[in-house]
Image (cartoon, rainbow, N blue to C red; front, side, top):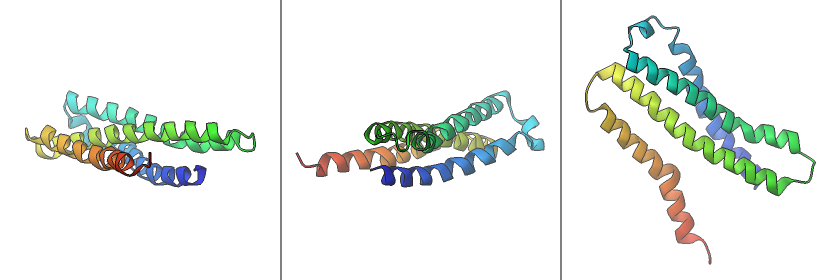
Length: 141
């Protein structure tokens, strides 16, 4: 289970690192000063979420390195799995906040929150709904 978990984490890490790297550059753009106070607050929240998400998704790697060879693999897998699930939830929120900020700046239209809510619903369905349905439907009792 450890190998599968680490492979899953690698995929999520790549996405969060690209997103977080992009977010870190926004404040240095000249247009940043033109953002409304609300948009600047959304940006700050999104950057902090990106940092926290990065920590959660890199945590399993650090955990593995620090406990490797200590004969605690079941406990390490359990904790790494929890960190990964937390990281996925945080990644969903970080991505939603990023999308909200970008669409608010790009369109200034009232439909943006509804569009973001639709995307969040899609993420929830793909990342949690379908997997939980599959788990429930196809798990042997």
